[in-house]
Image 1 (cartoon, rainbow, N blue to C red):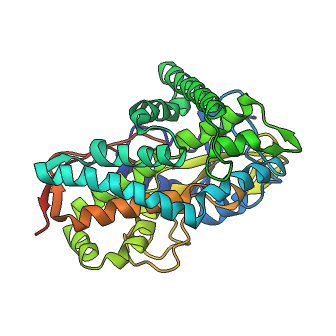
Image 2 (cartoon, rainbow, N blue to C red):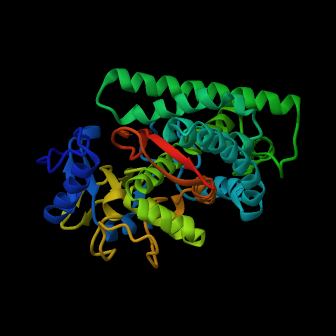
Image 3 (cartoon, rainbow, N blue to C red):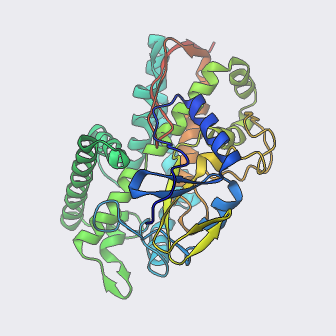
Length: 391
């Protein structure tokens, strides 16, 4: 990539409020901004530019460079291979599967929340938003929930791959390798104890034919790897963000408690305003011009979902939380062929967490300072709270 003047640095250690202000100011003066990380990349901060790039996989590839040497399907594959993986996996996130999974997720949520309410206090991040989604993932993958803590640690560490610190990147690589090894044990277990390919993702991958050929164990492990790590991290962030907002806004909390039918719309607004995954990359396959900036073939592009979701040209009162916002076409789950496969599962888990928290409390609020996650994740690491039980 040729050298360009640096327009901004989204990795600066800023507060959430300052980060949002930085994105808005940069979008206003330089909506296609050049950043220095990854050897230089073009960051898209306008909704319309992000949507256009996400909708054009021919000119903007997601297979430009794997984060971990070998690509992780389907995320790091382009058409036509991407579609084969997507079709294979999508059936496991269909509505009937999610309805069956919801029963298990709700049981876990009730157990956690009842324990917190009984004590009257707790850390809603560490004790609820961290375990719930990964336990849901374990149920989806037919693996024991006893593994949830190690899966969570490994997966969180993989998020450090974009760090400038060598020690962080080493943790990310180690986390990746541990998940790959864990996926290998899942494959071995399923060979010893077969399940129907209609009922189990690992069995479906073992039985699959991609491009007319069976998948080898390494390819299956890499497919499981993306499901294991992506299947809970952003949902953990979304639940924590939603709870933090409701703790800070007791009137909104009471509004949803009195009218639970508003919860699904409120979730979409929480996802828009506090986008869990700030950005995802693409690579230009040909010379293009976006927003007046010349981008060369091979250049890396960062699609800033978070900035697009706060774009005042796409959303009226873009910086306001409007819990019953209509036509909320936010970008929190991406857009185009790589739209998050697990979005139905994430929405269900966030809804269950909020429904049960609101139903089982009269009120809950802050018992200490919340700790927010670092770029490129928008989440809550710690959320001390008091809880008053419902009468």
